[in-house]
Image (cartoon, rainbow, N blue to C red):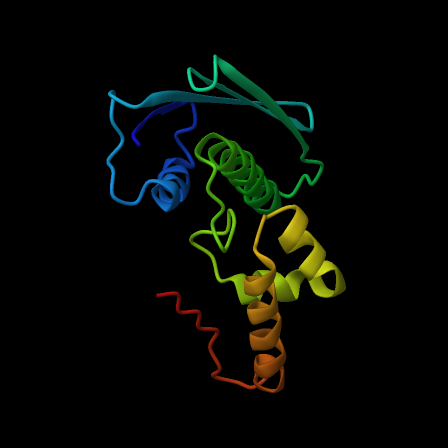
Length: 161
């Protein structure tokens, strides 16, 4: 299956196409495929994302995310996460495919998992759509890494083959 994807987001284009390749790894974006258009806008502290597609009889979906942090670096990170969550959920619905790591692409999941602390498993499952099997794997890795994290010269490595 092919997809003709358009969007209005220049600052996150690499992240968008990285996620799309998870659903369509052997197919380049093509004008021959079904269309999917993504439009995002921020008004006050709300990110609105609209998807339209000619698949399933003119599919249309809206997502709204609250982005209340005023720190620029945190705002940008949350903005990108919201964009990826919305795109993942839409592509998953349209293609009937679920990726094992959900919308988490281009990041170190163990580092993010540690940032969420006690609520990490729930956030990874409900927000990021990570499979239970991968959540258990990440949790195990985080626990194994724990004794080494505060030592000088340590690194955080994630390998997915």
